[in-house]
Length: 78
Image (cartoon, rainbow, N blue to C red; front, side, top):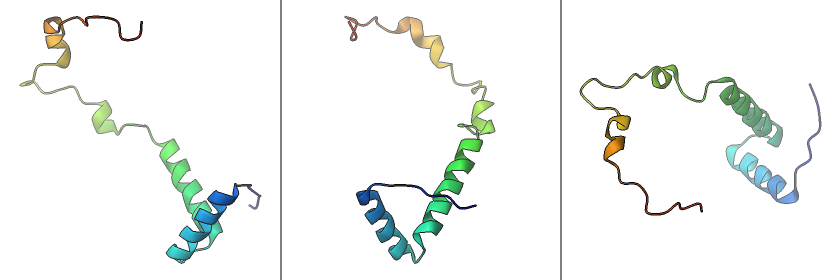
């Protein structure tokens, strides 16, 4: 599939330099960047191991100590 994209001059200059340094064409770098971006977007933000983490029995949860925290002196957003 072919299509055109328009980028500003500075981005084009940086892309040309990066392509020359990598020994690749600008098109190859753009294809790689789009492919990597699409792959990252198709994955959940956090791995299953992190999403499924239930804590550690020997460590109290963060919320367990919330009642010991001092209230802020003033609302920083007020």
